[in-house]
Length: 622
Ligand code: ADP
Ligand code: MG
Image (tube, rainbow, N blue to C red; front, side, top):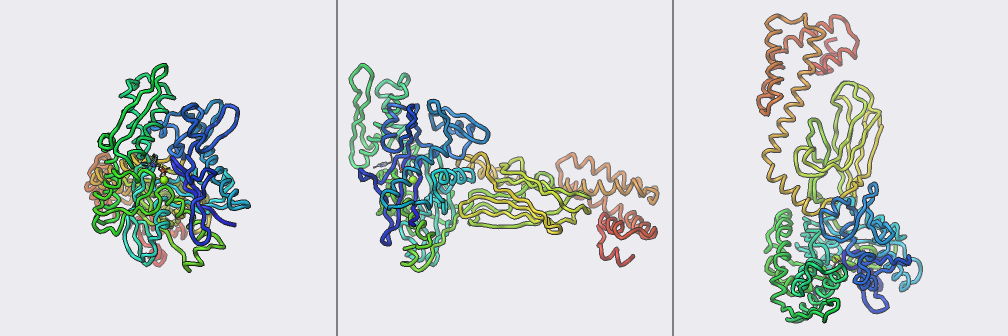
């Protein structure tokens, strides 16, 4: 059975399939490939998806949901922070619900309605039960958003073979892989999101060098700007009701599209009780209005190029994706920025769905394309932020650094900090900063059942795996006992691009401060370890000290305690070393006493450990 490719867009969604060796978009009865990502929850209980729902939005703004992709995998606080929707939201445990009439629906359920509609289109046209699909997501989607999208697929009765990044799918659709070599930028400006990806093609295999974007920038914003302008012109900016505002947005979008092919557009707005308000807008006026918003693509583009380590002139091509790139203004802007004329031969609305269909075909047992090409196309993506673990002293240890290719798997060994410790807390964090407090917490779990032993003896291997969908799994295993524990990181909230940008910027701004903080925490952890050891030793064997030693050790302890409360990591380090040196004679005498008293193996081993003496050496002396 065929597998389909789905572009689940913020504004529009499409479904495509490979047949006869090439991908094509499936059309509705009216001959349109596009299904508006709009869902109308009618008070009668009916659910209408697509064009009709979108049209109903003017009449039933409270019952119609648009651009719900902006809310998927997000919390109420985040959604409201973004300020880019007009819905009443409720947080229900970890689920975000949108209030529509008497109903409370989750963004996952709404997305599932869109997917069901596309699935039934495919069923009608391809015959039989379609159940497998590849769904595309913006490259910047985090774990929560990817999981939520996958769940929407499941809810729609689809087996999601893979989630593929939208720009990556576009590259496939363009068949850029046939060129064998090259570096490309994929510039995707849709209705609600902007994505930029830099791809490297080596021997026909794509690798995503870097990704960037803004999940809150797109053609919708141009519509809002023009709609605001229209309401202002009509003198209705303050008093317009919800349906007039919606009507202004519809008029704005129509004018925007007209200005793609014409130099002049007419906008019309209904004024209750009066004649319609009619006004003209020129292409120049339009471009002037939206320029500041369009310019917001610059920072992510620069960063993506920087992350990939290339300059615009080193690119072999730029691919345009997304309905908004039809605009001549956008095309001109991209050509100027990247210093070359962008590729736009494939319909920018369909290109992502076509690529998803190719990928779906390649993942099917009876793939057509694999037969034709005789090979697989390997698509690699990268992580937007580093993920790692909290270690002693509240430090973040990066396990998979940002911009790593995924799928990725990396392991690191950790050990116990205290004697007799049988459990280890695993705290998974995301971010570029050195201190956990400055990173984002993704998940916590505990590995229990570590056999008790001296501090530092246990070997716990922690493995981070990011799968092809960008979903993170973290596992911890005690290598001695074999006990293990793992979590799928399903964070209850995602990050906006602004937050990702902010986190990256902060890591640069605070780099020096962070390195000092790391040195300080490390020095403090070391010194506390040393202080605790000497306290134990003094408690049991103080009689082995000379009076002079006793006073020297105590004065160093006092100095170290004072230094620990300060911020000079060098001083702490120096005093810790000094404490080691002034107590070395004492340490040896304790060792001798232990041996002389004929203590058991374990005790000697413990003591050797405590004194930092090699285990084997201790046993030999015995
Ligand atoms: P998404 O991926 O976010 O769903 P699309 O790639 O489908 O978005 O692009 C939809 C956006 O493209 C909408 O903002 C729409 O107004 C805009 N758009 C569609 N056609 C044109 C056009 N001819 N000129 C300018 N913008 C257009
Ligand atoms: Mg799109």
